[in-house]
Length: 364
Image 1 (tube, rainbow, N blue to C red):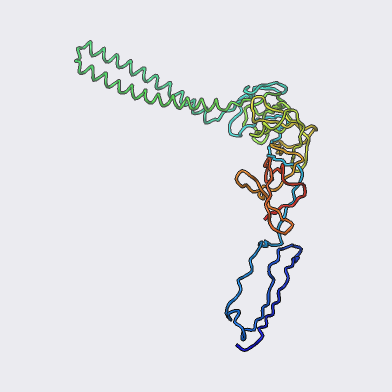
Image 2: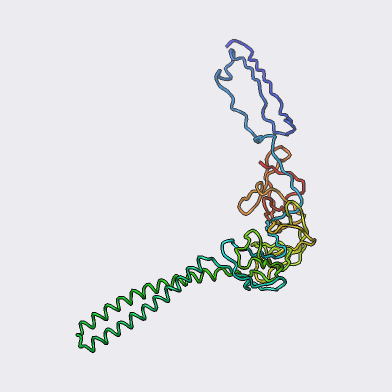
């Protein structure tokens, strides 16, 4: 080989730490330019390439959705719905079909639930009963007459020396007739019983304890006015919301709470029912003017944790018997941290240890 100079020029870029979008990363060999005089020395084959430089630590990206650790109260509630009951009032009206037969009470009279107030009858029921009773009387007479005639005919045959066959024939003839009458009598008595039950069913009784405040005495003997009450009974003044809920046990007797009625708030005192664990009453502390059946809503607290740190439960992960969250470390990388949790209420979990208030964790 002739004397020649194998000139090798190597430019090596120094290892440096770069800041990328504010993120510190571990540098790799940025690049090297090696220029060899390939014509005069065979240091490297013409088609040979260097392997890629090794990656020391993968960069995971700069943008994370983050959530701050908050401090506050965690509260789990359920709604209890109640219906307003004012003064218990019963208005008794006729149906306009039956005739008011008798009114048994007077204005100012005190009555109890179950007391008879009035009775009215359907003309068809009375007619049916009257006709049935007439048929019953007639058939009972026919049966008695048939039995009497049978006995007379048998005695006559016995006196004139009639044969056994003739006497048996007479007996069979009358017994068949009597059975026919008895069968019809049974059906007619059933018709009469139904008619009596229909008449008795038209007796109206009080459903509440109270005082009679109005009586339309003119209605007696007429069909009455089906659009107006015939008798009015005023019962006890309740002035309360009545509710039935499986969450009643979370309500405390005597507590003053806030109930919502048609978008407005009212203070009310809780009263419990001794005979029913699911019944609860809310007595408004001030006089209210509400329609019967108006609905109230009370949000009862089932579970509460006050002044605690918490995060959305969806970003606290379970790994075996541990709980962890992810955060962004000083290098901009996603890193795991163990935390201690407490109560889970609604969609939040209490943080007992491992994080500080306002500390940020990764949400995605």
